[in-house]
Amino acid sequence: MRIISLNANGIRSAASKGVFEWLRGQRADVVCLQETKAQEEQLADPMFRPDGHHCFYRDATSKKGYSGVAIYARREPDEVLTELGWDEFDNEGRYIEARFGKLSVVSLYFPSGSSGEERQQFKFRAMDWIAPIFDEWRGSGRDYVICGDWNIVRGEKDIKNWKSNQKNSGCLPEERSWLNTLVDAHGWVDSYRTLHPEGQDYTWWSNRGRARENNVGWRIDYQICTPALGDRLKACSIYRDQRFSDHAPYTVDYAD
Image 1: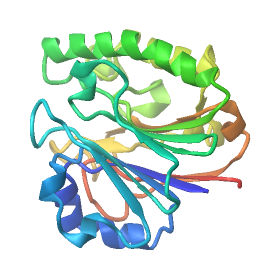
Image 2: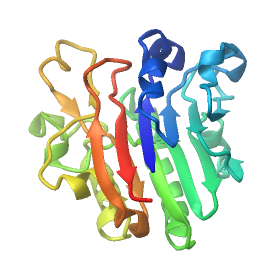
Image 3: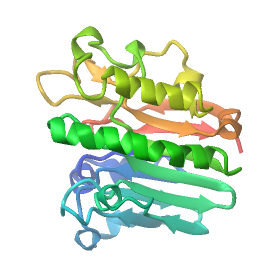
């Protein structure tokens, strides 16, 4: 089973840069997109319904052209969910889940606090609110893969400029503690870190300066899964050869 996660930073922009041609060659079972930045009626072109895929979008309703998530699946899901129960979060188009038997694949776009204190406080509230939901998923007996842009690094290996970012959103101690507790104490599996314990690869680079060229990046895109799927991890990769977005696609192969 192959799952790809990508923050597209605008699905129409990514399409113009060849993302759908690239995806066609990847033969993914499920593709999770974040930050589609479009309303579904703006995606009438057939390219946004790739051949052989069942396509599902959850747009932002609170602010058009903002946020938004999507899932493309080769197999038709038994069920697709788009709400977690907090309107302020749901209406920003941050969650979509496809269920296949006992497997759930989630495309999640977690809030960023980089635009100011108000959004940082929203991010903290989202962390507190969603943690019990993750606990419920973890104890449900279902297999979960939570794909997406979490907007948080876990540690020093996940960011190029560790010391200078300690007071910046995405690298704040309380954010890192929250995400590391999810993995270290609550039993979720960070697929990349499990497969590459000493790896120092990144999935996002600022558009400022020459961050991407100089690989001054952050690892903030994850596939975090339940332990049974963690035992099935085979390989993962971050694709940097083409630039579809300020993020790179993150691919994970799981044993069938």
